[in-house]
Image (cartoon, rainbow over all chains, first blue to last red; front, side):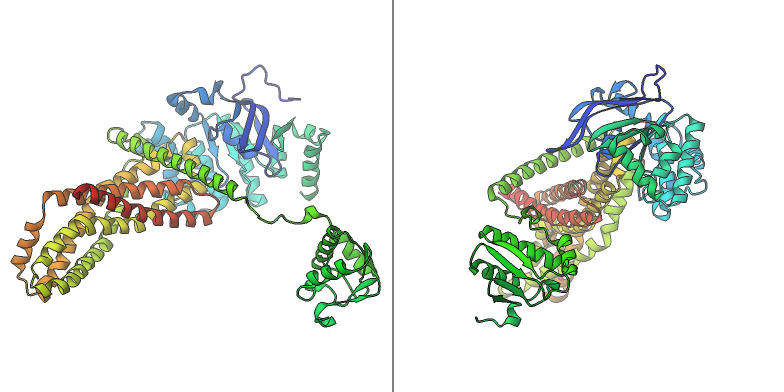
Length: 256
Length: 369
């Protein structure tokens, strides 16, 4: 399989090896192997129901593979013991599709959750960090708001602030542009790019928004019916000669 | 023929069947069955259907003709159309697919399959419940000396929400229960001149049974539903997943504070319910049974034994834990979106009230056999 963004000899930050996932008899992921290289923005792409979200859930440890391995920073997720896994999980951030903020708590309290859990910092320091994170995503001054008082785009940015709370080097985003208008999507993409530049993040983004892909993707991994059929950059994807990939960009390109 | 042409919607002619209706909205009732009969009765294995009266053919008519064609085929008859106008031809090409696989299979389930699946599901859900119970108990005990798994002040907040919030309703209901118990029993006891035993009856039944039970039923309705709905909503909104990816154990973060919140407050609520219930009986006793306040109180206190108080308290603790665990269990089990939340909330209330009453019966037997 072609892999144009060279690893430059670096160890991948995370990878899945010969991953297989199934719900009962229904195979969702079939022999998927994928590396995430430090510093890149990897977009996981595919039509609805192809297993994108399932793949993401394996990367972040929410699902245990039926076969194969999931590696995070060189270690196999499921051979780690409890404290090691807790240490590993602090090095990743996850932005869920609709932000997944705790509905009963303010924005500041939401962003503070990982800090309260994993550090011994005093409340004053935590509130300082929370202010900083909210400023990074452009939500300064919204500390006291509840998630229900926010728009969809703001919720996602708040979710991003929470994902960034412990300064993880690797951030996963599940359909960040789902349910957002094109202008808000544009701003969110720009935010992700800025964060990558300023914080040196590695980003893995599940999406099917072509406009977004064109703006942010360094590398594309295309899933089709549970199989990884293509990895490479956008230009190569457009001329890959692989039917579902070309079809995706052709159809999507026609409407955008 | 018993039916007129207008009613059947077709007429059988020499060598063909002529449709008289246009097939919009599927034609007259039982058209398909009657046509099918006519097709089967016709001679030869080619049957001609004259469509010249049709102006156009929609998807309903097309599907009806397709079904007719398939049924005819089964009976050894080939259906042919005549008098097809250009408009109808268009309809045929769009909607006429006499292929059997286009029929949605009817849901004829096999009883054994269903039964087996139900048994497997049942065992899996029992397994889930046992897992949740053991994890909740384990982490609740751990929480006694390690409070890092949940937010500071969460237990106090839950105790306030579950316990203090329930005060007015529990007080009102148990007062009324005491009142009614006294009224009903007085009517009987008065006949024997045994008015004074109303005091014993109220004291013992409120302490052993009604206090803990009424408290538990109100807690199941008020807090059990809230807990199930809260956890189910968190599950649906991926908040539970988010907690996991932040390295938090959802049981420790969400369930444990509720377990302690209810354990701390339910016995107190139950004791308060008992006292207020007895007060309700006291009012009836003094006002309408001509008992002196001193006599009522002396009789009530004298009738109670330590075991009654212990059994009432133990019951309220068991009920409380049942309510939280069952609510959490159904909350975590939610399937689907917002409508799933409503479903599991209802189920959790029904099941926990049921469980509370069963547990009450078992504990009653254990304490007094």
